Length: 115
Ligand code: FES
Image (cartoon, rainbow, N blue to C red):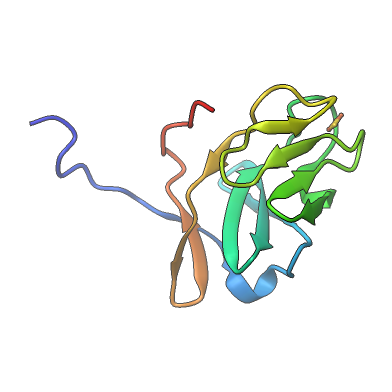
């Protein structure tokens, strides 16, 4: 049997209360920088680095279900990481957020989605 019973080690990022509505939070954990966002009561975790250039998504703005990069105002879908507004064209890496007892975790080894 393949893939059954493999232990998953979750990585703690921050508390849910640390993330303001519509303002992403920069979280560095185990050498990787993440942008953690809250929108519509849901939590989203994306790579902090914009796929278009030097913009940091944790310094961007949540607009509905999208995260706008502060550098050239390109946008990404929070649910899929798919680029939704130019000049962004490449999907940004996302992880599924798991909330336990008010803390946000991810599986850093979760396979990347292909949007
Ligand atoms: S660096 Fe993010 S839109 Fe250009």
